[in-house]
Length: 139
Length: 146
Image (cartoon, chains in turn blue, brown):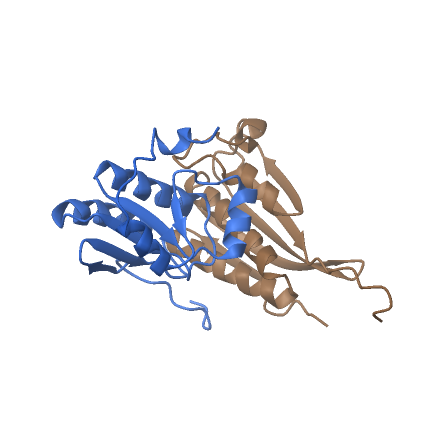
């Protein structure tokens, strides 16, 4: 295809295991099918490897549309059901501004400014904060 | 001065791989025309929503990008067209939370909020074309700063 464009990643999103945590780093050009695959892979890894926490680093993600927003919200929700927690780390300011304008505030999502802060958050004892489904938390 | 070089394009939308190319093209074209980072991100996000609609609801189609100007201001116009089933109830499709494709129902209405101009041409059985335009916003010049 067109030269000059960075090549979209093919295949799976790499998932790094650190003790009982997983670190997922999303980069710029993400296909829908890869995001769907990641969602499935994470659920299986959490159960198979007794994972307690998942950090998704999105500092390299240039835009989140409603599809990727839905995938992130669903990963967070399914992680809770599997007795683990997800923190999304490093959202760019322009992405946050755009998400709000798009109408997608993702109330069920835990966020941190950096992966380090996300790891610290996950190291804390679990406080039961959730009372319902992802979309029922807004007032 | 900016030129339209590298902005004009016609890209197919037939797979989720094509969505990636559409986003990359819009990002580069917007950057070339001088859009701020936030405005680039808004336009790329709108393009992603509209291109996905073209793919999922329209059964595939294309995006055409063009450089437009008015009163010395540069803009980027994007047209997404398909020859799919069309949108039977446009008002409903534009309202938040309405979805027929398994998404969050933010696609069309959300995209409209992210751009300056937004127009839909559709009829049952006659396909859909969505045209959006965003303009490079230049901050007002400070008084005395000539």
